[in-house]
Length: 111
Length: 113
Image (tube, rainbow over all chains, first blue to last red; front, side):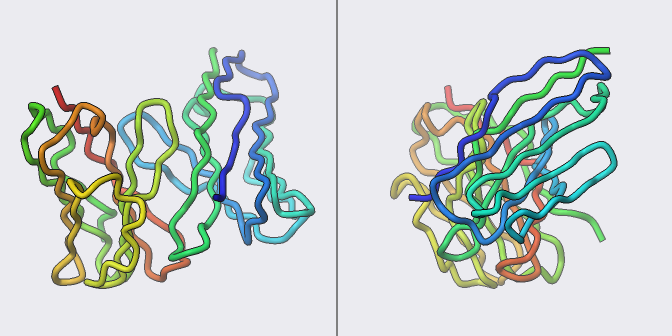
C-alpha cells in the first residue's frame, strides 16, 4: 500500500517567519504534487516534481523532491497571512492515475 | 470555460436516506475522479472514469456507494441508506488525460444526522 505521511499536521506562525512542511513515504513515486486547499474549496495544484533531487521555486515557496523519490518538502519564506490554508502532498497511484494524498498540514499565519 | 462544478454544495440527510451528488467536469476532459475527504484528512480516492467507462472502483467503501457517467461527461455519485460515517466532503476532479493535471471542484459537504 502506498502511503504518504505529512508533518507537521498543524502549524501556527507569525507573519514573516519561515516554515517547512515534510512529505514522506516508504514507496517510490514517479512524481509528487503539492496542493493548497482553502475552506469550502477543492485542492489547487501548486507544483509537480518529477526528477529525484529536483528543486522548484514558486515566488516564496520552494519545493524539493528527494533523490530517491520517496519524500518531498515545501519551504515557505517570510510567510504571509494569505498563505494560510491546508497544504497537501499527493502521489500518483499505481493503477489508474488516481492521487494518493497525505493528511495535510493546516497552516495558520497570524498578522 | 468554467471549472469543475458540483451540486449541491451542501446536503443534509437523515440516516437511511439515499443521496445523489452531481459533478460537471471541464468540457472535453476524458478522465473523472471521485474522492472522499473526511474532516481534518486528505482526500481519499473512490472511483475513476475514462469517458463513460468506470475503470476503477476499488476505493468505494461499500456496496451502498454507486457512481455513473452514462454519456462520458456529467457524473453522479449515489449513496444508498446513508450512515453517519458517510459524512464527509465529496470531491470530483477531471483531467484531459489519465495522468494529466487534475482540476478539482469545490466539493459537496454531506452531513448525515
